[in-house]
Length: 319
Figure (tube, helix red, strand yellow):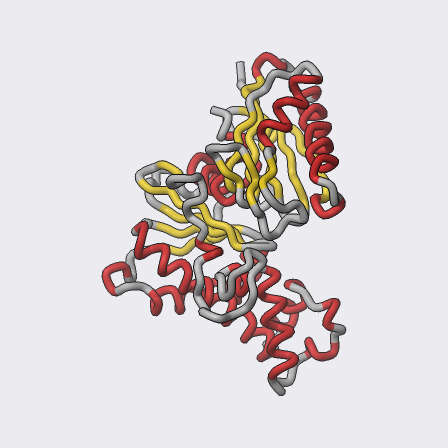
């Protein structure tokens, strides 16, 4: 008989849920809009409702192992989300404790395990994707922010307090853009979808480069419009991807110097840009590496579906 678990991927825009069997098959899914909630308790209560919805879809509830959650700034040790810059909810949120208590009050005694969302994606890649059999790799997630999960000797690196591996919050441009974390010049503020848009607006406002993006109201400029302009050869849009790639490459090269991975997997919405992102990323990555690491480390787009990788990884936390 198959065991089951529930995986939850908390993102700055949406929160996805999946009922997953032990072979990585997603039996049922549901989702909510994270941005629709201003009060954290209301948001967590909605998560509980959707967990129960999936519990009721499980054929044999006695085979349900638990609930795994991947969340920005998720602390594996404490089961908390702490000071996540891309969520409306600030401070320290006791997610594990709150959800376990609410579920128990409704008759469901399930253990909840929480980790950083990028760590969950890394676990998904390690168990179900391109990192099978690889013991040293880095997972970079490019979405609203820039996340990362680092695997060394086959284990996720959590560090002393559970927050190790924040490549997105390493500084690549001292005195650069203000980041949501309160510091300046982090990778995230250049190489996320949000950062790509900021780059486009800076180039539009501070240069005279001709571009079709100048014909679009600035409120409507986003990742998709920049991509569409870039594939048509728009010089300014291509420059946006070049800057995005360069800053990410520097951050990744710094992480390599500390962890010496075999591969780096790139995951998330920005990977849909394909060669527009990956070609300059590979170029600047090799240029930024310490010589002993050059021409050794493969960069690959994640082998997992963008919509399911973090859910699969989160579900695997329960085993």
